[in-house]
Length: 176
Length: 152
Image (cartoon, each protein chain N blue to C red):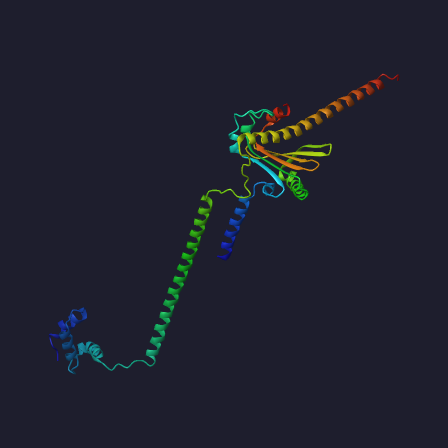
């Protein structure tokens, strides 16, 4: 039987603006057998909606469980990997900061006199002056001896040159 | 990561080791049987107006950086010092022999090493009958300063 109120109700249902009472009215109407042929499709839909004994496919529960476990483990692995990467990055950054701090401390510390860094042994400038005079005198003496040696070499070379010239002149003056 | 840390550790050790080395003769400074004299730049700066007599150091004092004298009469130490001199004062280490003197049982060798910034190092090694002496003079002495000392 065609009911003129059904069409507007249907329109509101499909728009999602129908109330619960209106939905129930539609369900009750489409539960009847005398629904006009033009509304048969809607009737099949509402009958499906009204069904409470829809059979589940076999093993669906187990398959859903497996899928959920798989998705969960993927999510856990991702989270674990992200945590590991973060931990390593923070570790490297911390080590770098530690090294920089240690280097800065090492470079900024005042250089303390060590056993290998000589310290002044003279108590007064006068004593230091006398030691300096002695040391530089030894240097001057040695260099002086070296210079004297050079002068001896020069004198000897001159003598040798003179004798050589004498011999050459003597040879030149020999009768041919 | 381990290799990176090991590399950093090695660099720090090398830097420390390099920082500690000054001259080859520094190890004799506190040695038993060695008489050691050291005059630093700061002490030279306090001497600029002094003229007690003897070798005139006016004009030279302010050019000196450091002076170190090491001498010993102990035969075992003398041997070590001789070995150090033999290995350190070579051409490959930048040392040039200026003078070698052998006179009445006394040997004197004078070496020079030129550093950057006109810094010169003179080392006088003297072997007497019972004593061995090493004198290390560092400063910016030029030829005229040496001539002035020689002619005094």
